[in-house]
Image (cartoon, rainbow, N blue to C red; front, top):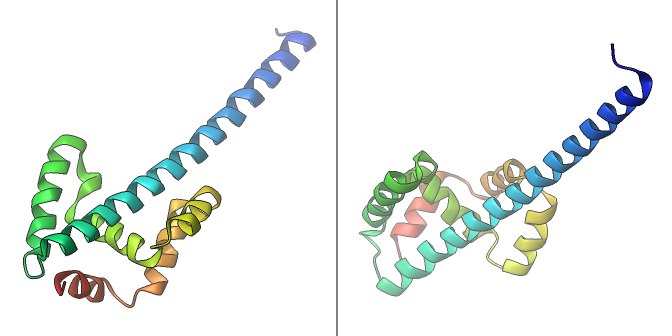
Length: 129
């Protein structure tokens, strides 16, 4: 049987652990969101610089294959296109950085979906460079 002082100590330690887990999740969420934005920016800028209009989708397929082999399925072709869309919607980094610290990835992604008519439109825009 645990006495009252020990129970209070356990409760306090649990509280500390839960607080820290929440802060870690928020920091990880923010860093992942920033990573996705930077990946979307690099793809957009590099494809524009290369003038790769019709080959844009194939380049993304190739990039996806390499990244998935090394980092897993989070870098599928579909996800890379979503990262591009994230950058297209939030091109001003200072605004995006402020939002990424305050919003969860799922809310930012939902906003991106609302601001874009369809995935096909984004792909067409990407491929028409």
